[in-house]
Image 1 (cartoon, helix red, strand yellow):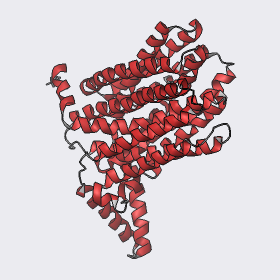
Image 2 (cartoon, one colour):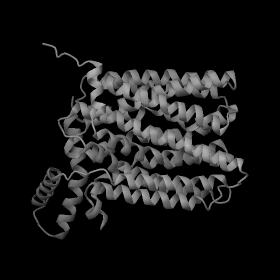
Image 3 (tube, rainbow, N blue to C red):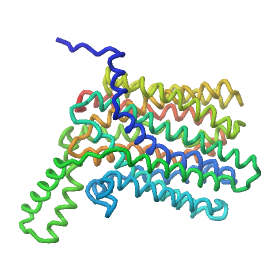
Image 4 (tube, rainbow, N blue to C red):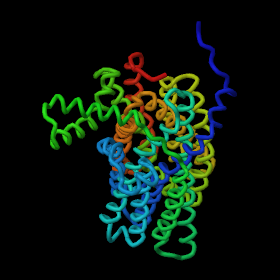
Amino acid sequence: MTKKKESISNLVKYYFDKRMIKILLIGIISGFPWVLIGSSLTLWLSEEGLTRTTIGWAGLIFSVYAFNYMWAPLIDRVRIPILTANIGHRKSWIFLMQSIIILSLIFWSFLNPTENLSLVIGAGLFIAIASSTQDITLDALRIEQINKKETKVMAAGAAITVVGWWTGYKIGGVISLNIAQIFENLGISNYWQFTFLAMGIIVAVLNILLLFIKEKIKHEKNLIQKKLDQNIIEKIGSDNFFSKIFAWISSTISGPILSFFKKNGVKISLGILGFIFLFKIGEAFLGRMSILFYKEVGFSKSDIALYSKTFGWITTVIFTLLGGIFSIRFGALKSMFIAGILMASTNLLFSVLAWSGKSYLIFSLAVILDDIAAAFATVAFVAFISLLVDRNYTATQYALLASIGTAGRTMLASSSGALVDWLNGDWGIFFILTALMVIPSLVLLFLIRKKIKLNE
């Protein structure tokens, strides 16, 4: 007997769970730093006269997100003195990382990229490290807001997280670009430096709001970890200070990894990791160069803020929520295939804009449809990863899978500027290539689709 699917109206109710407000804030905190080291840093370097290739390689700072799984287990276990006891384990790490971001923005306000490029990139790297580190804890804090058996609420939470992330990124971008434009219109030569100080104030406000999120204490996870520590000590055959340290490190790192490969098997696990690595590369190539493309076509910072950020945010929110409902009702795998096709199709619209020249109609159409595809793809991706992880190792496994996805987007997409230069600035061909980049991941997913074990 087939199970009757819930109606759309009945699925919408999951978005009205009171915990979704907290999850929305968590997403905003996660998305906002990408404005700083993404569009804001890109425009700042561009307006200071740096080349596309240099700006593209500067994007390597994003590669930090690809490796945060390496220290995720430590963040899962290490307590921050004073802060942990007063505001909680998860929030203490987020609070500390937000403070580092604020200090880095203040440092940026004293720098000139043409004279101190290495220091500018260095401060950006600190922001990326702090942001990627807090993401580990933010994902754990989000998942721990929802009980283990509430699978549909978890899927809705994934959609709300994406809405929050895009809200932090898009609205943060609107604020950043408009503040920079205002300071520039006032005749302030170092308008970006003043803009970064304003962004620091927003980060401080988010830090204060974070304190209102309650944190659950997980005793079960601690017991499992201690039991694994003890098993390693028994296998070593000695119980002393050094054996305890070795056991602590071994169990912290090996537990989540062994659990993942045991669940799916080595071949399928490697296939999953390959798919995750490749899936959003084309979108990342486009995203890394989009601001420069808009600028070269002739759009102003205010135009970009209006069409790419404001309108983009509205469509992103709407279609992320619809994408969440689709994922809940039709499953993660089907959603991933559709998302990939949508991403490739919408990338081609930018080729049309490149060949047609400055057109507000084509610009708005391309940006809005691309945001729709990106929203659908992101919520499907988050839901897919959330269904893969073992709840006993949620933070570490989620960080590992998300980091591998980020590795593909950041490490390979850092060559996006060099690719445009190699094509002699032919943006139309560039965007066609970004559309083709999704094909290998979909082929790989098709080959392993029947053997993937999801928690559905």
